[in-house]
Image (cartoon, rainbow, N blue to C red; front, side, top):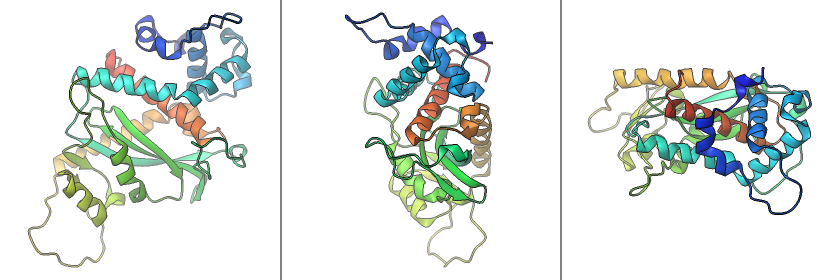
Length: 283
């Protein structure tokens, strides 16, 4: 049961220094690799921390280690490092990025938490939509299915409100030269059909591949925008990636009270996806 969620030796060599702390005093720490495997078990199984198998040691130790890594941004650093390696090997598509969102159901026990820390949003990324209490994940993938960036919001938030912040925050690091911040094509569904986003894409020389909604529009001078149907078909990649993301039961349903805890789980899942690409696992 536990072997399914364990990191291999090759994977651990890539990220070990991010999770390891050099301590000269105090009792020796429990194996960091075992603690990471315990967090992966929680991510994939969706179980409660108290239900963790004894194989990983005391559940409270694994949970406290997760909180420490979350507060230090270790999972974000892990994802950034993997982006650098994938970009060096040419496994990130720098031409086509795809944007979309998905609503995640939230358990009733996850609401009502107090604000903790400056990096925690006041509403904990909780909101009410048609499905009840939900959290929305706004994500940016490349055409290969590599997760690049995500933001959290309440479930009632419109997709278009987070499109520009998501693109502004994206930066693919590179060991040589400046980081890549823009793409060439941006496929998205009708939820992103807004003139403000199209002007934003024109400003940065990006080509939006977004179908028009059926609504009355004012006639505009100049040539009409061309719609690239073959390029738009690549949008199915992000649909499949959301299906894969929800296979992690800790993400398919939100159990975390704090948005930063839920975001840490998403970052870890995205890092595991990048590791699949890096080591050529079957997706």
